[in-house]
Length: 218
Image 1 (tube, rainbow, N blue to C red):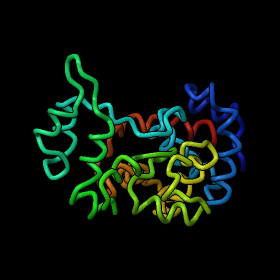
Image 2 (image 1 turned 90 degrees about the vertical axis):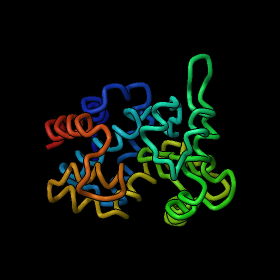
Image 3 (image 1 turned 120 degrees about the vertical axis):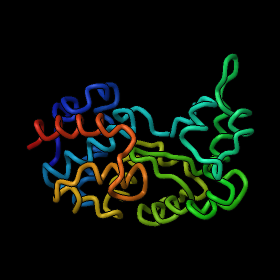
C-alpha cells in the first residue's frame, strides 16, 4: 500500500521541505521492488531515512577531520600522511575529492569496489538514498534502472533515481527477507558494513526510526 505524505512526515519530520518531491518516488520504488508490507516499508524507510539524513543528503559527505579519517579507515585505505594532508584541520577545509580517491581508490578500491582508474573513487562516491558506492555497484544499478551511470553517475542525485536505486540495492541484497524475519540490525549491518551480524554505524538512530515507522505504518 502506498504511504501518504502525512505518514512520511511522521516518520521523517526533517524531510518536510522535500517530502512532496520524494513521496511519489518512494512509492514507485517500493512498489517495483516489492517493499509492499508495513514491516518491509518500515525497515526500508528507516534505513534510507538514516542514510540520507531524512531525504536531504543525496551525495556522500566526505567532510572528515584528520582524526576521523584515521579512526574510520584503516591504513590500507588511507595512509597517515594522506589523512593529515587531506583531512579537515584547524584553519583548513577537508579535501573531499582527495579523500574519496584515497578511501575508495587504490588497491583496496579496485578489489572491493571495482574502482580501477585514477579518480574513480570520487566519481563513484556514495549517491542516492542508500549511498550506492563504487563502480561495482554503479554498473549493475545502471543496467537495472536503464541509466548510464558510468558516464553520468550524478543521475543518482535526482529524487526519482535516488529512491529507485535504493530499492534496487535493497532487493538485490535480499533485505525484504531480513525485514520479514525481523532482523533489523542485520539490515543496517549489510548496508553499513557489507555483512550481517555487525553493529552498524548509527545503530540506535536507525532503530529509533524503525520503531517510529512501525507505530506509523503497522
